[in-house]
Image 1 (cartoon, rainbow, N blue to C red):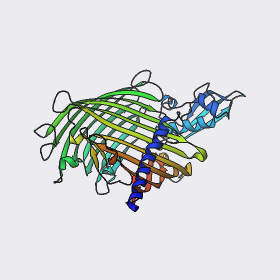
Image 2 (tube, one colour; image 1 turned 180 degrees about the vertical axis):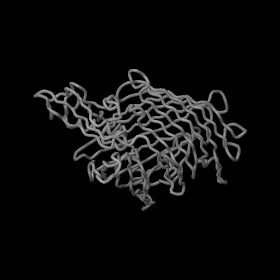
Image 3 (tube, helix red, strand yellow; image 1 turned 135 degrees about the vertical axis):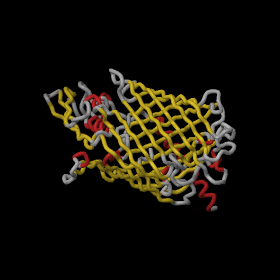
Image 4 (cartoon, one colour; image 1 turned 30 degrees about the vertical axis):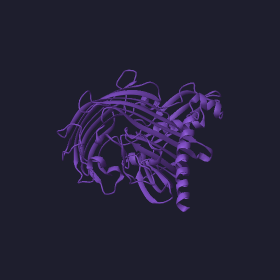
Length: 453
């Protein structure tokens, strides 16, 4: 009888998570544009007459202005001002952002956008846990410039040792055309990675994958919230111990060109930990052309953040990645247990050609975002510390499968729990959580960096 009740509770958890996400996906958009704010929050009749920027000694004004919903002629509301503050902070160029409304007459007002810039060019230590595993530590050094020419151009190089060592060079220019609508990205890397595939390992001694990767992409910003992109990637992988199935080619080396296309729609206020808005990502990729590697992938990722009463935020995510065409190599399988995880099954490795998952969270503010200024800090860019604390309730569910097997509802894993999420300066988010499996067993503590979604 006890086992039967645990089984029922498990499926209640699974269907609750899927139901919550389905409800969010069907709801009306949550983001308020300036015109929407006028109707929903009639707390002002003043319209923007002018926008004045202060403190952006390096950053160009257009970089900030293109993130703002408040343009000349728009109605000024408390909600719209807060939304723009979070959007500007999400650029990760400033330690502090403030917008002051300065009435000019009975019908209009100026907006004073006050900015404190971050430290843009610096060497930095690279220390972390590979796939959040405390046994797999990597370390190294990098050099980055996050605001070349004051245009939010990013360039970085990293050299990392320890677990899965790599060297990588990356570049991103968000505005390469005269109208600032085109953006360019590139990345070149070489890494030595431990194999993740349990199928390839087959219960034996694990092996290394030597990976070379070169990627160049071009995108176009359709609007302030949406963009399309295409990139071409060259990928080469060699295994240290060649056995049948570890690569699609018989000599233990796969090399091929991929073409990837994507669409992104992003209305989130604060990218690192949103409280309103939506994120939609759609992707299609073609890996290889008439060689050993020749398959396609189709992906989607939909996230929703809905503010409610007392600043409580309901969040939901649904995502999936499906394969088509020829054989999918084991190293290109989808997983839970590495990047994406099901809390409650946090360390369980689930592997397959295709993946489907969903999550729901309830964020309850314990301490709303605020700033603390450390006057004794010798470096100005580190004096303003932004911080906030939230209580979170969550539920996750997901499954993986191979195409010849088909999806199986009995293979769905799920979990639920609660935790405290801590937000700090320079976009750091720390999570302390405790999760249970669908049968209320297997309680586990979780410490992680970054929001779950």
